[in-house]
Amino acid sequence: MTLHRRRLLAASAALPLLARAAPQGLPTNTGHHDPSPHWDTLRPKLFGKRPIATEAASQIQIYVPLRAAYGASVPIKIAGQRGTAWRKLWLVIDKNPSPIAAVLTLGPALPRAEFETRLRVDEYSHVRAIAEAANGDLHMDSRYVKVSGGCSAPPNRDHPELLGKTQLRLPEPGWAEVSTIHPNDTGFELNNVTVMFIPPHFVRSVRVTLGEALVFASEQDFSIAENPSWRFAFDTPPATGRLHAEVSDSKEGRYQGELQLRD
Image (cartoon, rainbow, N blue to C red; front, side):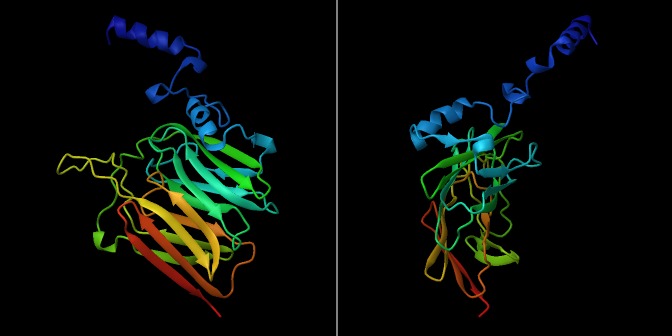
């Protein structure tokens, strides 16, 4: 090792911990509720000057790994306080190319705001959920996630003939899940054979009903991971009826799935 390099390493080691930075110049000590210039720009476009309850005052919580194993499939759970009537939910990834991952409208068949899905996170970023209660109040929770590369990771293309296959199931008591086989191409993935970018092609909307009643409707984009899925919870699990899902994508694809519940 040269004398010059030894001096550089010694100088770096002497720097205070708070002065060091993570890859891409992001500070390692960013807090879950710290300010974000990206959110400061987006917030007034979505909500104007409406007050938003945060931290201890918020009635919504999100759970997401601080360091996810894979940026193209980051698990997240959103849970609204039980007993509060919720009508809308926004899922935002501050630094993604398309930061609004999904906007969910909750119907009368789903009084609980409790969802699980998987995200693409492109770089170190705050991930946040904003929920609107039936009385119009807004509540927010955020987490700072240390992962990258989620929007450029190519999807699995082993079974293209299954594109659009949509399934509904009851994985455990009180929970249901809707999933669609779809690459959710972002437009930032590189084809290793042609060395050209793969055109964007992703699920744009999901609508789930129980009989004639709306469970939830989601307007979403490629920030939801490949083979997008939503797990959702019921206060009282439906014993009868028909769960039906309608899915559409950015190339006008239309897909359906249903599950007949036991009579």
